[in-house]
Amino acid sequence: MILALVLFPVFWIVVSSLKPPENIFTTPPQVLPEKPVLVHYQKFVSGPLASYFLNSLYVTIGATISSVALSVLAGYGWAKFEFRGSLFTSTVVILSRIFPIVVILVPLFQILRGFGLINTHPGLIVSFYVYTLPLTSWMLKGFFENIPDNVLRAARIDGFSELQIFLRIVIPMVKPGIIATALFSVTIAWQELLFSITFLQDSELYTMPVGLLNLTNQFQIQWGLMMATSFIFMAPIAVLFILSQKYFIQGIKGGSGGALWLIPGF
Image (cartoon, helix red, strand yellow):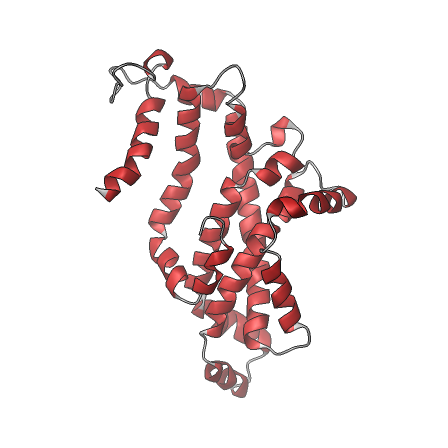
């Protein structure tokens, strides 16, 4: 019953995207289209939404790879090394998630403008660090803390350098955690709207959430195209989570539970 309630909106999106525009709203509702059509998907491919999809793909991959790479270093440093400023820097990262995003929107805009990154995809990727870095850093910190210190001491006794220990021992041991962390980062970057609509000014740079928003205006709502776009928008994330669900579950159980409050929606 619960599964049916969860899947019914997805089912309705799919069937509505296959209906002609005049059959989307009928009384009584038409559950299955009599003659499925692909006109809405054709509009998606032939219009600007296809390029928005590629923009989202580029921004999400860039934000995920860069934020996870930075977070691996930060999480490992906090978890396994004692240094001056460790507590301060980790506390600042936590506090950065306390404030509402809108509070830092104007300062972040000014910073990006100062570096010439407004209206660019690299600037948007950098802005996503506000979302992703606190999450990924603290998730990975939890995974690194689960590595026994005796393993690292034994490697040092055997003559391994710190870089060799990190690359040949630590990274393989936390590989499931890195994948789980990347999944959370992908989800955040893929669906982000506020920064995209604020920092991107040229329409050819828009991402999918902005494209979906633009399908609604005061005169018209393009329901068929919106349904088709919504299905295409959620399909990659759904497939990614299905293929990587064991890492996702491990990310919740294995050392990252304390960081879940950093995730929007949790």
